[in-house]
Image (cartoon, rainbow, N blue to C red; front, side):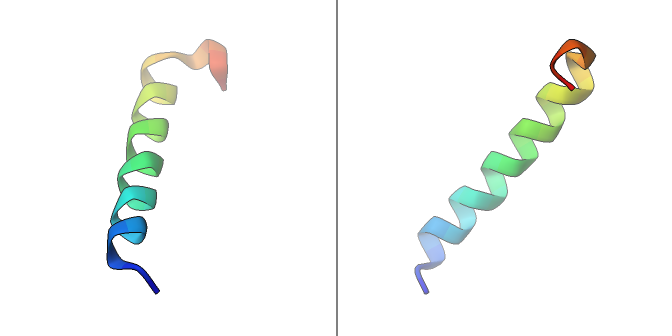
Length: 27
């Protein structure tokens, strides 16, 4: 397991959920 890729996956999911909350059109 690569810690770096795991952190990237976590940050990506966070940014994705945040962007969805600000842009309901993409939901």
